[in-house]
Amino acid sequence: MYLLLAALLFGPARADPTRADVWLAVLDAFPADLVDAVADKLESEVQVRVSRVARPIPLPAAAWYAPRQRWRADRLLDLLPTLVPQAAGARVLALTTVDISTTKDEHPDWGIFGLGELPGDAAVISSFRLRKGVDAATLRRRVVIIAAHEVGHTLGLPHCTEVGCLMLDAEGGVANTDTGTAHLGPACRARLDRGFPARER
Ligand SMILES: [Zn+2]
Ligand SMILES: [Zn+2]
Image (spheres, rainbow, N blue to C red):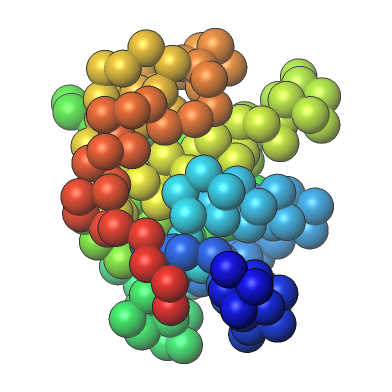
């Protein structure tokens, strides 16, 4: 007992168990306090290990969608591995303030909060559609939920129907985000545990 206690007190510091590695990459610009909030949320809610790309990355011209004067999220996801080569073998979540869009059902170019590969290595979120008319605390809550949602997709979580779960489909609005619990429901957490069990690394 005393030996065990001594080992606990003096043993090497251990990192928290983690499911996967995620790099945060700012595209063009993103408020530093929101980058911090996203990192905290991903570590606490999704249990991933977060690293940060040191400098903002310019938005790639190849993702510009001139007809609507905004940026194609699907192109950004395709380009992220070349924009963030240091994240090879890990996931990348890009953070930006510009308007992003993708093809959705019959809409060729639909503005979105975020997009994540299901499953895959790349995700992107934008504060553009989240920040209008809300205070800083509401914006922060929305941003961290959308970030966890898109990283959840990359870890194999599809949209779910659990009441209040952050993997609910946004259904074209922010109501599910604002009225939800801001947490993964038990079914999504169990699915994550099966697909990406948290381990000491
Ligand atoms: Zn989604
Ligand atoms: Zn769920």
